[in-house]
Image 1 (cartoon, rainbow, N blue to C red):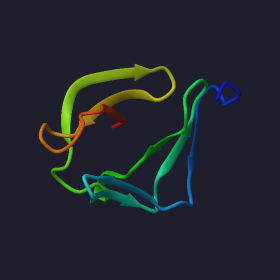
Image 2 (tube, rainbow, N blue to C red):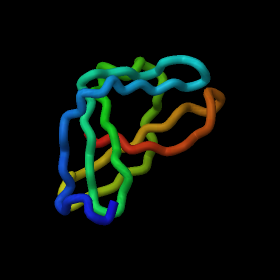
Image 3 (cartoon, rainbow, N blue to C red):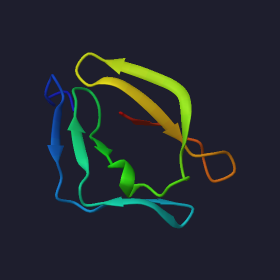
Length: 90
C-alpha cells in the first residue's frame, strides 16, 4: 500500500462488485471504480443507481481530500446490521 500512487489513481475494474448485508444483495455493479491511494487499501465506488434505494442513509460526517475533493458519508440505518461508516464521494 505504501507504493500506491500519490496523487490517488482512479481506475475502472472489470470485476462484478457485490455488497451483501444480512443475506440481502444491497449493491451490485459491473461499472465500479477502484481507488488506489498511498497508505490505504483499495477502495471501490459504486454508481448510486447500482445501490438499492433506501438501504443507506446519509450521515453528518464529511471529509476533504486535496486530490479527491469533498466526500459525503452514508451509513446503514440502525436495526439493519452493524453500523460501520463507509465513505461515498459525491
